[in-house]
Length: 457
Image (cartoon, rainbow, N blue to C red; front, side):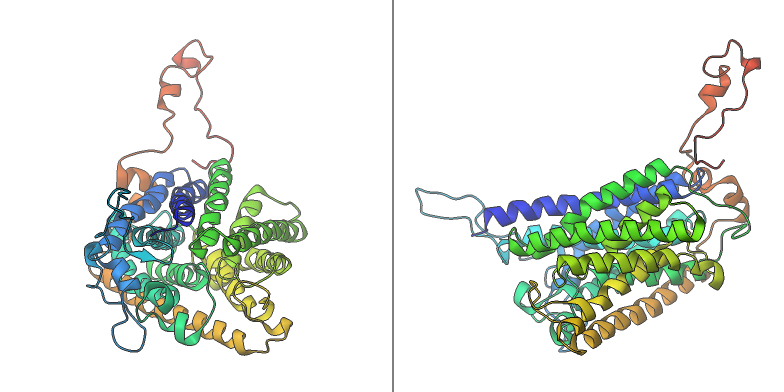
């Protein structure tokens, strides 16, 4: 019989994590130019529809089905295809007949709640990649890439990292069970995985027209701040929900999530103040996300003080890393590499140094007397995901580039991807201009209405 408290919390956590993808749409949408805002949001929102369907059809089974063979590389895609075997049971208790609710469980929650929870992880992992290809990737090509990448990269990697033998009652993934690397909520499977894929896809796709000579500033920092707030709110479901129940472990992860994000925000602002002279709202929002990324794998293994350290290191390193694209010449439009790849690596590796045996994970890192044992496990897990994601993403991207094409034309890029790909515009000022504008007495008296603060035309 399911535990009602755990089930209620996990359904709430699932909704919180799903909210993160619309939050990401706002975050990314505000960071691009005004002619790309709708396309950027559509890339995130379309990930919900596409990956959600694939997850039900075969994605969950590939990630959490019993391993095919002994290597722990991939789950059986047919085992739970279309939710087979997960929906049968008694859903309503009958006191007179003496029957109780009896449905398939994962731990103390209905299996279908676990399926839905993990679906939201798959969705946002795919959506994260889109930030690296803003302004220039064809929407149809994005959908094809997203579907293939989720199927052959994310689903298998989720099996490696998240499928524990004692949770889903089958032979699980090699990183979770054999290597015993710690990734509580997705530092490797989500952030490192998406960050590497974003780097490879950006390189194959090529640079935006005019980058880096022309300024390509965020057009609406208000949207960025709102998106960051929704991401932070949803991240409590992401991290605390990964305890798969409501209790001491989820409380531990919850507090670590607050501490790391706060420390990273302050650290990023300090770097901006020392380096550029001014702390910025974009820096504050980016710092929060960097801290959340870094604490994701570590929130069950480091103390609250350790979480502050993880956040501070991530805030500094990610703030510095976002400038690498200019030195190395790859156009990662919205700094997916600098925040998610670097932040994911920071959090994953710092477990090997800062993990404490007093945490729910019960593992000691180097600084707490555990030696190098956990550190090498963390490094191997991170490198394996990086290598697999890089190679397979490159194959997918090059194949699509040579067949259906990845990029919009130069002319369409100049016009704006919202108009050319979606026949829409995020901001319609024509009604203000056509009638002479607000507060004017005649059409001839009106002047062009400027963009709002922070926008680029």
